[in-house]
Image (cartoon, rainbow, N blue to C red; front, side):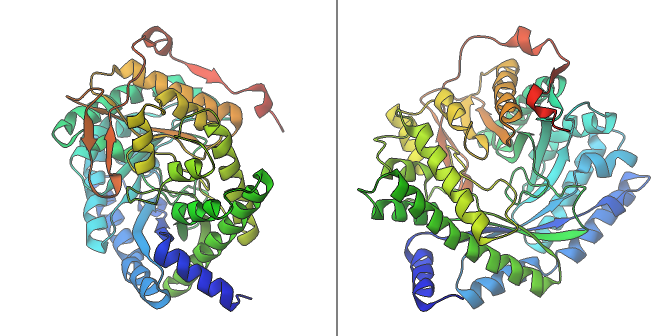
Length: 454
């Protein structure tokens, strides 16, 4: 039972500590939309999404009004289009047409993003997946709401280095096509190792083939709440600090489960998971970096930062799984640069580098996220950054990702501006030494020995 004190405490979290439901994401299977020609495919995709998601935004708004809980985003994820389009898409242009259909129907139902313009070449790349990947730059240039992801490896399979090499070029091309907008297309493109099927957060959301026809997933976030809790035990030891974070994460997750179940009931669509990731925003006080510094680190990136993040991530997960039997997605701490004012400040102070961020990804839930790098960065260097991050995920049996933005025409010392939730970011330096020969080897990095558990 929820008592009066918990109600008062939750109200305080919402009103003063930036607690919100970051997204209600409706996952929709498009497997029954497969067709022999692309025009029929697009029509069936449009009709299915328009019908299934017609009440999504209204439901989110009603829950926000009825419960006084801010529901920031309403979004859609779909079956990876590399699978759905395999029967009818014969060229990159065909896949671009599908992307534009997704963009149009997303606008019609009122969501801000739709994810699932995705391919899964984890072990090998089919011709359909290759065509989709080749279409990504133009698809992202010509749409505003479509998000794309590509899965490049897993602990069980290894890393598809041919796909890693290709994605370096695709990211560069996406940047070039939107150079007049600080290469913003790359902010909607992410590559994964161990990609989850039920992630409600963009840009990596897609509706996995193991999922039911439609499902409600919710992402709840409260960096400001955690920061306030950490500050309340300023002089406590690590045991006290851990227990405080865990208890707070429990309360945050209960709120997410309430919203998820209510959205499921009102829409008549099954509830899937609650993703309890701590997802920052550019707003002051809504920062993962601020939590780390509240623990006692002078500036994020200083020695001790990775340990602080490990404690935070683990206790958030422990609190979450006690609050809900259906925690999924990524569920942990996001550490983007552009979407976190504290991270931006740390970069500008010189305490946080891309190498330190990579070390932090060994224990956080995502990876190198929303990092702006010089526009002159070679495709092979981008692929090298991706390969390193995929290796961290593969060896550590965890999800890792890369969303880097080579900002065409800008260099270290400049700033990229993306606007809205995406914020802005200082251009971070990358190594000037080449990995071209390594990336050029091709083939597949085998799975680690500890993956063989059958």
